[in-house]
Length: 336
Image (cartoon, rainbow, N blue to C red; front, side, top):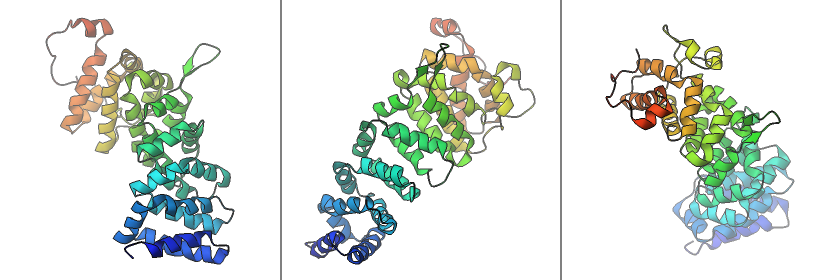
């Protein structure tokens, strides 16, 4: 077995003229890939293109059982870096996207395969390089509230690791009345209300918020921070509701109970402080009032520290902030 002869013969059976032979070979490969031993992993690392070429071809056939097995093999095998690189060399990301759009079945397996393929830069680069594909992935994720499609959220996170991906997601349009919109982010914002997707969407927003020049105008035009505040503004007495955007008080559900959501939300707000656009955007929705009450409820010191920075920067005007007019640090507590 050290020369991988048996594995090569097994892969060759995937191209056999008889369908039942192909099916049996796929069954064995599904078993191997699901519980891969060191020898099979060694084979995939040594000859990944040889192994994946017939599997990708079978994914493009019209037999649903064959496609299902081939996709399962791809999902299992694409946890190996060499396999991802080989699949991308064979235009695998494009072919999986085409298969998903053509079939509209086995959706979860297609989405899982795309997630694995885009965990490496080579997969992200292929995804972004194909005109219209990344946008279609975002729209499918936003339009379909299904756990099968949830994996596409990870694909979008991976896609926004590249500047080109952030540009696509942050693209703005100006309507006939002169108003600027960011339609993809507006679609994505609605998924913040889906609890199981919330942290994934927040990861996407954080990737964008880190890129001041490319993404801050899109974030501002989308109003996505308003949607974030729906689960960041505590429902307690003493709220100064006139100081926040009316949508926040109308649609708010109170402060999120999980620390992960609050922490990443605070990071996003902190990133938005890095540009004039970001600070103006936060002032316009009344973020100071949101973080003022949030700080009173927050239990994590690291999050409170971020909230303090956000509050101090957004409570001042741009002229005050840039002139350094307030030299003495005010009382450390935000909530008063």
